[in-house]
Length: 497
Picture 1 (cartoon, rainbow, N blue to C red):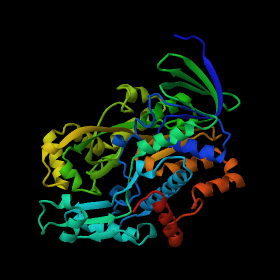
Picture 2 (picture 1 turned 180 degrees about the vertical axis):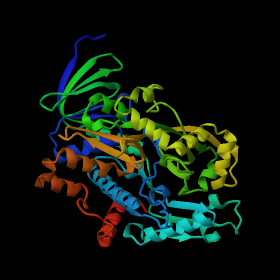
Picture 3 (picture 1 turned 90 degrees about the horizontal axis):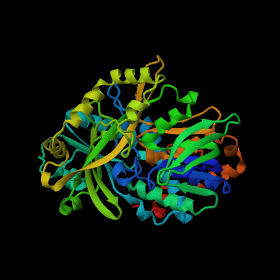
């Protein structure tokens, strides 16, 4: 094994080669072309974990169809705030991706994004009433103005013929649709962005390299110890700024960084599985992402959906995901990930979150115990004519939901994404799951605002951000004309309907 340690210096180190690191790296290089960036990934390819097409929903999460973003209040009304903020964020992503395509920084958009209508589908009097209330709460907003609602049997058959096969006209059914929905292959997009980054001066990308230690020095810079998993070669790199975007691997690295901002954070891993259709005739009958209501206690990544995907040019049809439990934090992780993540400073929040989320625990136990017949039964709620011989079980990704200290010192289980940064802005960590990849651009622009607070105020950076994201600094929901113009432009560039 080589004894001599390789040493290097950079301004930015990105840990993890997923969509978040790719997005942050590209934006920083656009803002400051001479910035020196090193990227470390412990696997042998980019986007092999949460960003991979088979490991996430690929829904271009724009809150058009995901019912968990529009919770029902005790009085029966629906709160649209979260859905509006996610829809705003997805418009930002579309603008940035359009910029990359126009500048020839990523190849043809057909490689990573396609038009696929987004639908919500429910049955039963109470759920139909909820969907109507949700439609009314959303459709009055410009971002959702194109949404349609129907309880008409013939109309629903036109929107989603496969879902309606075998149903009776007297069933209580309702659906909404947004024709401008998309399917996004975040794995392909991420790899395209890294291919572009790798060709730039001052960018070094290291696969099969695992970060072992992080330590902040007296001058506020960071010393990072890395091992080449292939050769055993040790590296030390020194940097002014570290971003940890390692999916389920982020929490253990945050703990290694030993910063006060990381106190009390824990993680709860949730795994997933898809039913994947193997019958081309069935796949051809469906052209939509149809989302339903989650079971009580289900995490957001387990909201059931029957989902048209386009992966590597091939149309696919998935149903699920079915949740599961594993102590791994990554699909390629270790069964010791969860026990090793429990420390003195997060033990009480972890125990408290477990006690306060018994419905989730019960739900996961039920999911793990499901038989193939149980899964087909769940599928038939969405596709009554489904035949078990047309479907196979596939592993989906691994997610780690965030646990953090609540106001009373107990633990709160969070289902969104959370960015933690040190007060000096030298280290930032992304934890959590949904909606994640779809809102990566907004998340990273916000992170830059916090960690590069002086530079982002300069006229040069402001002008460049507006060039990449024409609506930068503005919201679109209160500017219908600007929204229409931007959607038209991004649709043309991304070749969407």
